[in-house]
Structure formats: structure tokens, C-alpha cells
Image (tube, rainbow, N blue to C red):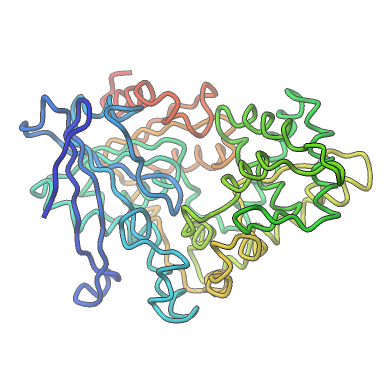
Length: 433
């Protein structure tokens, strides 16, 4: 039973669906999906086309907007919008350290989580679409990982898609996780260099913090063990439009004087724990590398292995000389499951997923080459999270896809420039640009 309520200018309806855990076994175990429908108040009773939004991540629930914020306001001008919590996120049978023990031990948990990739998300969408649209195809808007899912959608079930819009989320069609991270570390280094060029005083600040952490066992208020590597992971911020500025403000307030000498301030520790902890989205850490698994090779902690090829990211070596301490980006490592209390009980599960060697392909190059769905994609020129060169190769491999390549925005362009970004891409799918 659905429940409707109002926010300024919007009528919202909560939907819950029961879908197969494994779509290859439709009569087997089921899970629950949650999605929030949004429609403009003055159009609530109109027969509008549907747009389903696939959130970035993986492992993040859909945006919780208030009223007609960001891109949603533009979408509501012509669509009835479905904000889907992908399986395992938000209210959709969440997968966390608290819930996963219901599955059994680590082996059972890993088998379960292997069913939480883009192919299952797409099949979930197709399972619920007829009940909402009466069978009509819908527009799919995919941000970041949601764009990966959209390309999977065009591969597996293009008949369900009327139009596809992708922002910062064109994946490589054939890269192994090793290839992804081998391309990622140089992009991350460029972002760090740009940050230090903007804020040269942060070079010494980062070195001082890293040196402090090398000599001490620092445990944050939530129980997170702040190692040097965990501190370096704050570079994840550098892929967003305001991330460099936020990182600068964080570093400038790191220390306070105490009777025992300089210590990391409570304010700094409080801010850092909110940035490094996966408590709000543990599925991200668990399945992040599996989104690149498409063959019989395990991902095998690719980000950790490939990092060894880039010794400039070794903070201890940097501190032994006069090199800057480099931050890292969108990478998950074995130590993440030791540092974060929200992940510690799931370390063995994560190891088993990293060793999984039977991933099925997520993309169908032949079907994409014959694509007939109008598709437009924003490709951010120096995107830290998604390799622009790989994105453009994929764009050329999808028949009819039109790109908007821009350096006006970083990876969070849909959040920052929402209405304009969505309007531009919709116009591209309609040959209006």
C-alpha cells in the first residue's frame, strides 16, 4: 500500500515492491525495494511520462530532496519521477553489518552480495516498471554509477528505455579493475597537484598531519582508527566542484595546543570521521570493486595492488624526503575494513567478494552498437572518478549517443548545475542542440 504526502510544490508517494533476490530464480527468495515517486503539485492528476533516477555509488540510496531542489525541479516540468533506492541501499533491504548476519556467515553474505550489481538493479527496474507505467518505457537518468547501470540497461533491456540521460557515468565496456585503477591514480595525482597549486600552504599542513599519524595510534570518537592511509583517503573530496576548498578548510583547523603538546582537535576529528566512515553506506565499500568484474578474473583488491605501482603515494617515503604527501581518491582497500568499525565485522565477506571469479558481463557491445534509444551523456573533462578517455571510447561504441564534454563542472555537475545540465542533455536526445 502506497502513502502520499506533500512538500512545497511536490506530491510524494512512497512505493514498496517485492522482487526476486535472484532474477534467474523468479520463484525463489524475494527482497523488498523502496522508491519515492515525485510529481509537481499542479500536475499530480495528469498522465505524465515516467523518469526513473539511478543514484551514483554504488551503495547509496536515492537523493532525499526537499521540494523541487536541484535537477528534480527541471524533471518535474514534464515527468513523474521515481527516486529508486537500489537494492541494498536506503530502505531497499539494506545491507549492513547489522543486517547481513541474517544471511549467515561470510560465505553466505558474499554469495548474497554478488547479486547486488548493475544487472540485478536493471532487472529490478524492469520488474517494477509495468506496475508503474502500464508497460510504457521510461526515461532513465543515471548519475555516476547510475550511468554505469544505465549502460547495462541499454545492454540487457533497451525495450524498457524511452530515453537515456547519463551524467559522469559512461563506463569502460571491457576494462578489468586493474585497468581502472591504473588509469585512476595519475588522475588523482593531477587533482592533488592542482589542490597544492591553489593552496600551497596545505603541502606542509598535510605533511605535519601525516607525520603526527605515523607516530601515534589515533582513534576517532566513533571508533575509526585514523591511519596515514585513511587520512590520505580524504582526497576523495577533490573530485567535486568545491572539494578542494573544503579540504583546505579542514586541514587549516587540524591542530590545537594542549598541555601535552599539539593534538588533532576535536573539531577536526569530528569532521574527518564523517568523511572517512562508511557507516551510512557500507555497501559501497563491499561491492565497489565488483562493479568492474566482468570475467573469470577476481578483482583481488585491485586498488591496493595497483597502488604499489605508484610509490609516490607512499606517505612514509614522502615524509622521509621533501615530497608532498599525496591524497588518494575513490579506492577501497583491505585496511578500510580494519579501520572502520562499521566494516570490521564484514572483512572476511569483503575478502570473499574480492576473490570471486565468476562475474558475468554487464555490457553487450553488439547490442550497444545497434542501439536505437536516444542517449545523451555529460562527460566531465578531467573527472577524477570516471576516466574521460574511457567514457569517450564507450560513447563512440553506443550507436547514436551524443556527448556534452565540459570542464564547467566536476563529477558532481548534476548536483551543482542540475536544471541546466538536465535540460542540456534532454535537448541533445531530442536534437534540439
